Image (cartoon, rainbow, N blue to C red; front, side, top):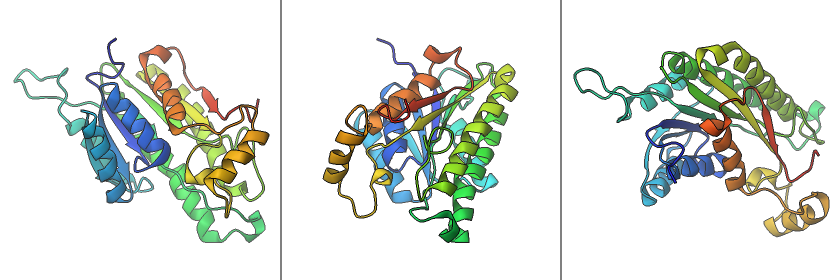
Length: 266
């Protein structure tokens, strides 16, 4: 069976752990060359090692997505990766950015909105909203110059448009903004050949889904009784949703928000 992303170059932010790492591994397993980005180099190096261990190609690029220069540098890094399908008349490889997954995000909550430190508010806005905005701008500007365009998937959350929870008001506001920004950008740029969609995970097997002081075993027991499915989602299951939206299988899917939350908001 042919790989869906053979010959394509992908960029994944927040790829040092959790959902971002799972997405990067899944893209590489289906043939993509992957630029993995994040603020800390050590986790990115581990993601690259895991990809290369399974026979894939990856490049780690430390970056802060809340900075326009870093967002543009990530796109350049992806374009500079060797691309065997496209060559100039002189035989020099011409790169492209075919898939971008904007997954980088932070959660600073656990307390009522009135008690949230101002710095926590600004950090969530900077990474979760401004970071996606700047990434979209840099990625779209490149993709719309390419004959085949490109696909972008932004990772939001069920907190926001679909649900909320005590202690998560600011985080929910930023994730609702991601969904709204993505849907608007999808309409702005589909005629440019750039297809934009959203995946909204619920409770997933990452540290972010642990309540303060909760162990993984306690989380498992809580999910057994509170989620319709009886368990939280695996990171690989969220990655599968991302890859579907990024692939040609979803060629007619534009501006959608795909929820992966074990039935929590059904």
